[in-house]
Image (cartoon, rainbow, N blue to C red; front, side, top):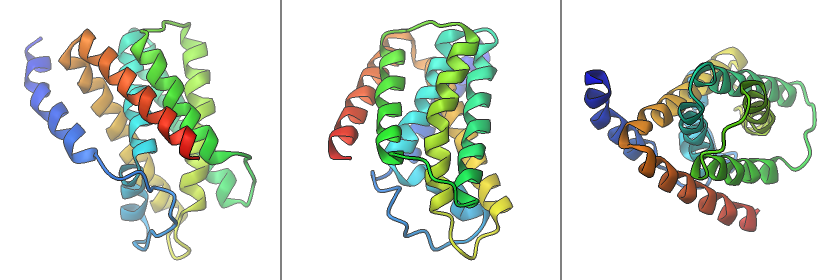
Length: 191
């Protein structure tokens, strides 16, 4: 419990520092490699909210879900990025991302418990869209491996921020989930 109390300031700082505009899909990433991949998830509210929500939901699920849901998200996100890198199409990427923010926010707000395999599958299905967007926006000069390592590292950090955000208490998590869902609904309306 002492560790949890010590992490509260770090979690709050992470949430504040991670905030960015909702323009992650402008294609204006000029820094190549790891740095570009790392900054991409922080550059848009849609990615940031979904990835923090995954961490919050994993905490609510508890047990094996604490690692299984974020891991499924990261692995499927890599697959989506690879699909984009290889020229594969994924329909309605922006809509899928916005829907992911709504649904993940709602499951957090409602404390929706599901079997671990289903939670991992839900997270993975949404991660394909996020990964595809990351892959499409990889700068031409970037090393795909370094760019991928960057966005995986940032995603894991955002999941950890969500997990650490659970330190603020059950009520705060539900409020955060409702705010995430409302933000996602706005993004969906704008998509």
